[in-house]
Amino acid sequence: MTDGDAEVVLRAARPEDARTVAQIWYEGWGDAHLGNVPDELITLRTRESFDTRAAQRVPITTVATVGAAVAGFVMVVEDEVNQVYVSGDHRGSGIAVPLLAAAESRVRANGHPQAWLAVVPGNARARKFYSNNGWSDDGPYTNEIPGPAGSIDVPCRRYVKRVD
Image 1 (cartoon, rainbow, N blue to C red):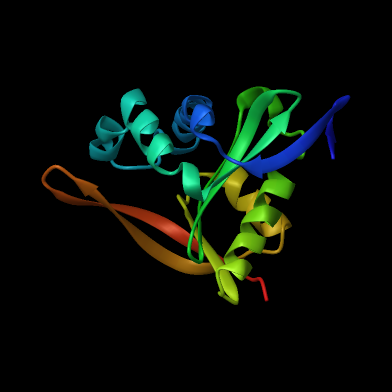
Image 2: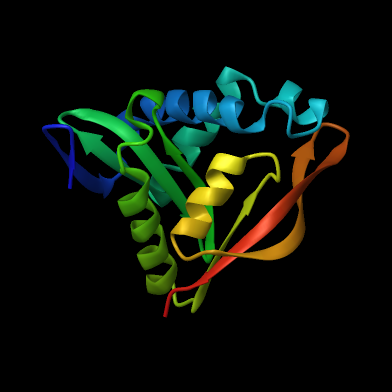
């Protein structure tokens, strides 16, 4: 696959990718979630929190590179496609499609016949993307995010796709 004239390569994330992954995640998360999640969660999602979580999740992360630069990533936890983000300057280039396919393959390799993910209802761009790539809206889902005073309930939609 290419993005413009540059080849897109998928590979396992490396520790040195964590800072770039965190930056892409932080910016994309803001675009997708501000105004769509409780203010309490927005307070927790500092730039530093993304640095910490990206570093911890290197083993479950696949990155897409364009040239030498990380342009997007996906994280998979067992049967959950946990995060899918593309940097702002590569959105709309098609990079998310092979990232999502890689996530589906990883769920299958983890021994699960079906993948799932959660998306906030107000993230229309993501919801359309998942639907266009064979995912089905399976109904409401409450994502319980650990917070300092207990969990923060984030209303979401649960999307599913058979991967076997």
